[in-house]
Image (cartoon, rainbow, N blue to C red; front, side, top):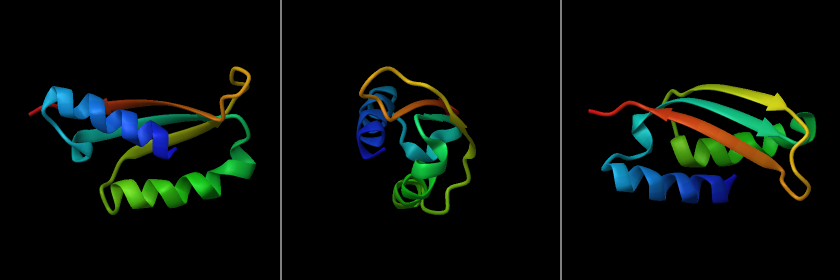
Amino acid sequence: MREVFRQLDLLLAEAGIDRFAICTARLYLQDVRAEIAAVNVVWKEYFGNHPVCRRAYGVELQAGMRVEAAFTAELP
Protein backbone atom coordinates (compact mmCIF):
# COMPACT_ATOMS: atom_id res chain seq x y z
CA MET A 1 0.00 0.00 0.00
CA ARG A 2 2.88 2.35 0.71
CA GLU A 3 4.14 1.81 -2.84
CA VAL A 4 0.68 2.61 -4.19
CA PHE A 5 0.70 5.87 -2.24
CA ARG A 6 4.24 6.69 -3.39
CA GLN A 7 3.15 6.34 -7.01
CA LEU A 8 -0.06 8.26 -6.34
CA ASP A 9 1.95 11.17 -4.90
CA LEU A 10 3.99 11.32 -8.12
CA LEU A 11 0.85 11.44 -10.28
CA LEU A 12 -0.82 14.01 -8.08
CA ALA A 13 2.28 16.22 -8.16
CA GLU A 14 2.24 16.15 -11.96
CA ALA A 15 -1.35 17.43 -11.81
CA GLY A 16 -0.37 20.14 -9.30
CA ILE A 17 -2.52 18.73 -6.50
CA ASP A 18 -1.97 16.68 -3.35
CA ARG A 19 -3.56 13.74 -1.54
CA PHE A 20 -6.27 15.95 -0.07
CA ALA A 21 -7.81 16.27 -3.55
CA ILE A 22 -8.63 12.53 -3.51
CA CYS A 23 -12.37 12.01 -3.07
CA THR A 24 -12.91 8.31 -3.91
CA ALA A 25 -10.83 5.14 -3.86
CA ARG A 26 -11.39 1.56 -4.93
CA LEU A 27 -9.01 -1.02 -3.49
CA TYR A 28 -8.71 -4.50 -4.92
CA LEU A 29 -7.00 -6.90 -2.51
CA GLN A 30 -5.85 -10.45 -3.14
CA ASP A 31 -7.03 -11.49 0.34
CA VAL A 32 -9.22 -8.73 1.74
CA ARG A 33 -9.90 -10.45 5.06
CA ALA A 34 -6.24 -11.02 5.83
CA GLU A 35 -4.94 -7.68 4.53
CA ILE A 36 -7.55 -5.02 5.33
CA ALA A 37 -6.25 -4.36 8.87
CA ALA A 38 -2.73 -3.64 7.57
CA VAL A 39 -4.16 -1.53 4.74
CA ASN A 40 -6.15 0.50 7.27
CA VAL A 41 -2.99 1.33 9.23
CA VAL A 42 -1.18 2.62 6.15
CA TRP A 43 -4.35 4.37 4.96
CA LYS A 44 -4.59 6.31 8.23
CA GLU A 45 -0.88 7.24 8.04
CA TYR A 46 -1.36 8.60 4.52
CA PHE A 47 -4.75 10.33 4.71
CA GLY A 48 -5.09 11.09 8.42
CA ASN A 49 -8.59 12.46 8.94
CA HIS A 50 -9.16 13.36 5.27
CA PRO A 51 -12.51 11.76 4.35
CA VAL A 52 -12.25 9.58 1.26
CA CYS A 53 -15.15 7.47 0.06
CA ARG A 54 -13.43 4.07 -0.05
CA ARG A 55 -14.47 0.60 -1.14
CA ALA A 56 -12.33 -2.52 -0.76
CA TYR A 57 -12.93 -5.69 -2.75
CA GLY A 58 -11.43 -9.14 -2.53
CA VAL A 59 -10.37 -10.21 -6.03
CA GLU A 60 -7.97 -12.55 -7.76
CA LEU A 61 -5.07 -10.42 -8.95
CA GLN A 62 -2.16 -11.26 -11.23
CA ALA A 63 0.51 -13.51 -9.76
CA GLY A 64 2.67 -11.59 -7.29
CA MET A 65 0.23 -8.70 -6.84
CA ARG A 66 -1.37 -8.08 -3.44
CA VAL A 67 -3.18 -4.79 -4.12
CA GLU A 68 -4.46 -2.68 -6.99
CA ALA A 69 -6.08 0.71 -6.48
CA ALA A 70 -8.07 3.31 -8.41
CA PHE A 71 -8.47 6.88 -7.17
CA THR A 72 -10.56 9.89 -8.20
CA ALA A 73 -9.39 13.40 -7.41
CA GLU A 74 -11.20 16.71 -7.59
CA LEU A 75 -9.30 19.37 -9.47
CA PRO A 76 -9.56 23.00 -8.34
